[in-house]
Amino acid sequence: MGRILVVEDNTNLREAICESLAAEGHHVANAPSAEEAIASFSREMPELVLTDLRLPGKSGIQLLEEAKATDPFVEVIVLTAYGTVEIAVEAMRGGAFDFLTKPVRMDHLTTKVAQALQVRSERSALMRERERRSYLEGEVRAAFNEGEIVGRSPSMQRIYQTIEKVASSDSSVLITGESGTGKELVARAIHMRSGKRDEPFVRVSCGALAEGVLESELFGHERGAFTGAVRQRRGRFELAHGGALFLDEIAEISPVVQVKLLRVLEEHEFERVGGEDTIRVSVRVIAATNRDLEGEVKKGTFRGDLFYRLFVIPIHLPPLRERREDIPLLTEHFIRKLSEQAHRAPVAVTAGALELLQRYAWPGNVRELENALERAIVLCDGDRIAEGDLAFLQARPSESIPLPGGVVPLNDAMARLERTLVERAMEQTGGVKTEAARLLGIKPSALYYKLEKHGLS
Image (cartoon, rainbow, N blue to C red):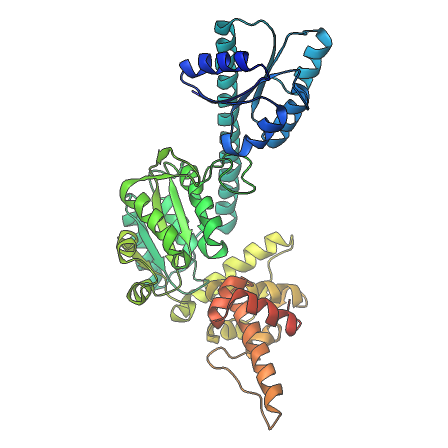
């Protein structure tokens, strides 16, 4: 059954049509003019408009144009007592589903209405499938571009073993570790080794979205749910149905979203924003965070019941400084990958340069290593990276914060120190401003100001 808006200035005919369609089980609203019909669009959200051609004020053709501009998927049937070929052609060119002349038999009208609603349903389903395929194709490309996890250290071997064990289950997984350690790669590896590898793997960066946006992103929204919601949109849970949903930066979600997420994990159902229909899904949730989530529970900023729903299978990724033996292998992997992207032959790495890479503490972990190698490949002379090409690492010890030497004005010293800290935070997080702000303990808006202030934007 559908939502229908009947627009007819003849009161008796309008009521007769409404009664006939309501008897078929449709939700029917009505208006005596095009102006009132347009004003009611956001409230009624009709799937089909049934309009007279001649109306007081704007005509049925003008209503057709405005209805299509508001919702390209709405179907429109035009009724008129003055049927001509020219009018019919004009209506069909404007996107009308059909053109009927009065007097029209009610059984014929209800048949046309059913056909129009069926066409709309099929078009909407086709559009949703195209949207889903487009999104998933992008995810598949991302999976191939990002490659496999690299490392042979004992700690990484244990992680490989855990991945193999948990891949076949549908249990929730919580991946923890510092920023840049490869949490998303682990999530993808779990999914690709599961029996649902051909099903969707959908990711959401929770920290990058405001509360209202994140709620709509996860659960979708109905047309008219808020300003700008011009059509129904499926959320990531629906896109991930049958597969896995990766929730990065899970510690950043608000209490409101935490409640809705807990319900999905417990009952496998939810409603879209602004919707009433309950949607059931089968989705494996894999979450990740670089914060102490258990500590957030103790502080009261994260729900304990949600934490335990996520903390079924924990996987902790060690920082790169705790698995330095993997640095030569990672260096080889990134040089090959970055050289292919730059369409050049892979460069070599001197023994001195490799020693420096292994000695450096890598506060930004694997992501910082990749960024450093990309910079070295661009700046190096010839076909090898020497120790001098990594001078920016030697000039930037990572275990401590160097204070300006000598006696200088305090304001100058503080400004230099602030710039150093901001630069380092941006490098450690690979330029991700929300993560850099969190690392510095300031709001993203304050970070934007400091980047502009120090000419780093």
